[in-house]
Length: 264
Image 1 (tube, rainbow, N blue to C red):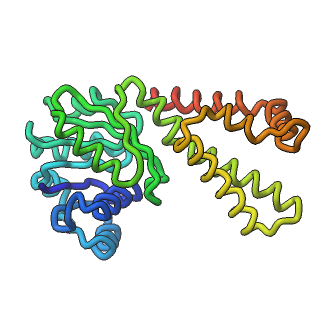
Image 2 (cartoon, rainbow, N blue to C red; image 1 turned 90 degrees about the vertical axis):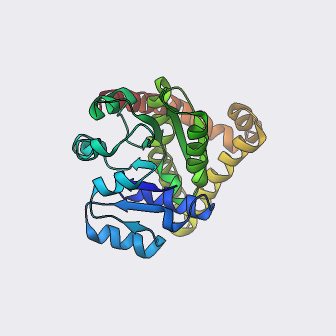
């Protein structure tokens, strides 16, 4: 099996690193193209993969083709590779906002297509990727894609109607978590803690809290209650967050992401 990448940016790097680490494929089975020779040379040195002279060449030789370019470049890339895509090739898109219907219209023919929405924690092996398939995709193709995307975190099958929500709750939300970590660290610095140490405390607290939700299966609200001792410091902080509208602000931010995704 040959896996082709059109686009070799950060997300492609995460996918390639994950599937090589999990021995899903070998270096010799991966070929890719990027806009610059500098990027391709970097990927050859880091992962030992092959690179091609054009997108058409990558598409022609691939059994599975991963479109990892920015959404704005999709029309020109699809026009370039359209004739190389046959009914037996599996095409995987990781572009935000581009529906399967839109992509198939650009190809101007039926395509065996999977749409994925990974997030940036994939770069450290802790990604969360939403996966949806069209009617041409076989069960074994979907299973392979889930295995591929699961090599750098979690991969979850959902209907396409939920992709905008998935993009908001996992794709965009790392930015808000980083803001939360930064704000907590700022408060710790204001209380006298060195900056580096403040980031370590804040980051580990977020990591551990998320792990508790995933591994215990306990509702986040119940876990919150477990931390809030009567008359204690934590419940006082919770009171202030509720007063300042934290819950509503987060919901509104993600709703804005969903609406923006629908317009891409």
